[in-house]
Structures are given as C-alpha cells and as structure tokens.
Image 1 (cartoon, rainbow, N blue to C red):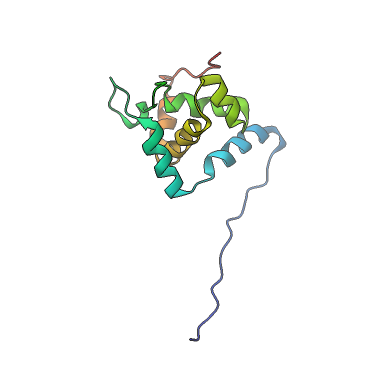
Image 2 (image 1 turned 180 degrees about the vertical axis):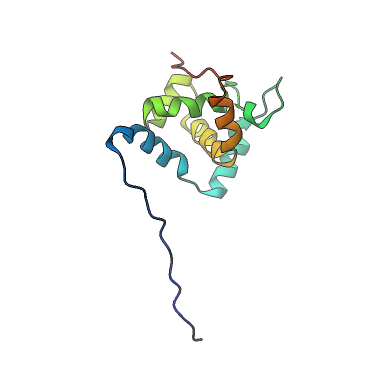
Length: 124
C-alpha cells in the first residue's frame, strides 16, 4: 500500500496574557473533552429542571444545582473542580457532567449566565 504520509495539524494557541490566567485555566478545563465519557456523565448526572423546560435550565441530579451555576462559578475558583463540588455539596463527577453539558450547549448556557437572569455567586 503506497501513499503520502498523513500529517496532523496542531491548533495554534494564542499567547497568554498574564492578567487573564484564571480565565485561561477555566477555558482549558472546559475545553477538555472525551465524547463518550461526556455522554455517560450527562446521562448519569444531568436532568431537566422539574419546572423549566429550556436547555439552559438543566440541573444536577438530586441536588437541583443548575448547570449554569456550576459553569458560572468556575472562573471564581480557577480550575479547582473539587472546590466547586465541595461548595455545592455534589460529587466531582456531577461537576464533570456539568462541564460536559456546557461543552455541548455553550451558547445557551452563556446566554443564561451573561444576560443577567442567572445569579452566580459563592454557594457558601
């Protein structure tokens, strides 16, 4: 079998600005993805809010913590996902599921967070 060797392109990264280190770390955490694992986490930990029907209003199973709250809290703690889990008193896997859902529904979750209708603060 002959042919030309396959080459892979690596995405280039923008230079980091030292003032945005926490936001950059948060973006890196959100960007990591394994589709199969993401789907399993979402099926296990994410449910539609019992009284709201939009994709921006999904919640974590049992705790009913909104996914937008988990995502909105991320920049406040850098990439410390365990701290988010502790703050909301949910398993770390539930936080991972929230980020997996966010990767698939970024536009609606961002709109929910940034339009002012979502209150994101330290849950303690």
